Length: 333
Image (cartoon, rainbow, N blue to C red; front, top):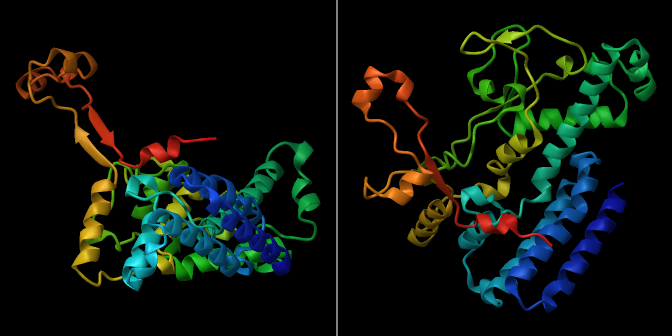
């Protein structure tokens, strides 16, 4: 398997070099991001990640090198090691964090494989506990496997799922939902696949390395139905697995290549620029309160005195979100 993946990654690396003939930097970026980088994404989603993480890291480094070479006309060789690492982070961060969105497969495939494998076990459990016509589906798809007892798993795909789950717990600051107890506070926003809007609260330089833990569903709860817990508001909610994009976002902030210490004032200035290019959220408020054109698109809320007397007049506040590099996400072939 590793030889097969290595051959596919080597083919991508060769094709990346062929794109150097493209003179337009934006087209070169789009070809690398949407054509070359994605070639291994599906393979990673269906392959046990511990076997291919190093191979994907080499492929990702080749793409980053090609982007820096084209974007700086080979001047990137004069950068310091610290600044080169910062540029790699800049290229790999999503747009709402001020990056170019070249998500490394070495990180995203972990979440892709984990989310896909967990979904399969949950789907088999849903079918087996549902209609009678599907009651034998789990025994057909996973013959000889007790899906409700991970300690008895022996199939390669299930063993790889256990290994990925353990890696998330030990290496990427994740913890499990308690089987007998209330939901942890960090899990409330993950219930039912929801997640906080990262664009609304972009990370600041001072707290960029402070990553809250991510709550995962214990493997013993994937197949069988379990007790319903209460969230902080007292509402009945069932524990659930965070969706793939939430896991990927969490892993991106903990990748070894993203752990760095600002080495000089030049890098600090770059971090400040990164914050400015991150998603900015402003309250829609005109400079001139009598601006008629603005009022047509953003109704002015009633004064506080009127809202206190008539609560029904309270309207949702209008906000504007500005992302400098968001246009890159809208370009398609």
